Image 1: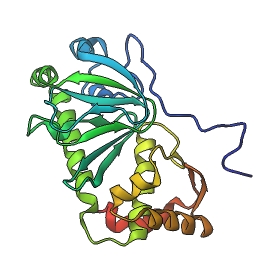
Image 2: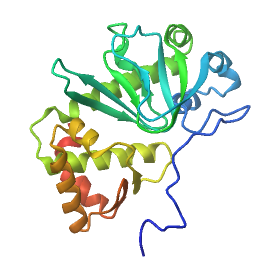
Image 3: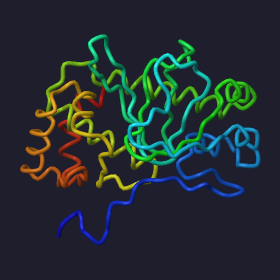
Length: 250
């Protein structure tokens, strides 16, 4: 049976808006809030800081490099890539962000955004004023710890591809990491929608686009994945994780 049945289209991940007591399902701060014993009424000040923005169409800039840093953006629906462009016009993709993840944390120190953030598909965000959320975090240790955790996670993701890893390891790590991130937000972990193009993946993994396409084809022929355009089903997740361990264990 095909993992991509025609009568069951892939559901684009999207957050709900929560209710009077609970945050939306992919809120970047909800888990830390609950662990610290805060419910939505207790975090009323945080809720006031949130502005829902969007939709941004595919190709729209959420922010641009050198824009003043005033806010961080939590993805509610869609996907975003962060990129830098060198003097010769070559694009390096720093990362991809899915619902429940925060974009813009790498702007805290320079106080301006060091990269562009570009929507990969129609996308919606929660925009948080960073000066206001920082002030609130000094009064709420759980919120402050979540901010530190998100910053640490951002730094860790940035260093994973720094090593001299084989192309197969890089592509496997990309798939496994994306699956784990979707699972962490409550979305299907073995069926992935790749909002990004093969060129974007290649620019992120520091590979040629044809290399990425060739490796994905090899994974499919080996029975590790099923592949239909931008839809990927992980058939042998354990095998992929073993292949990616040198990258993911950094």
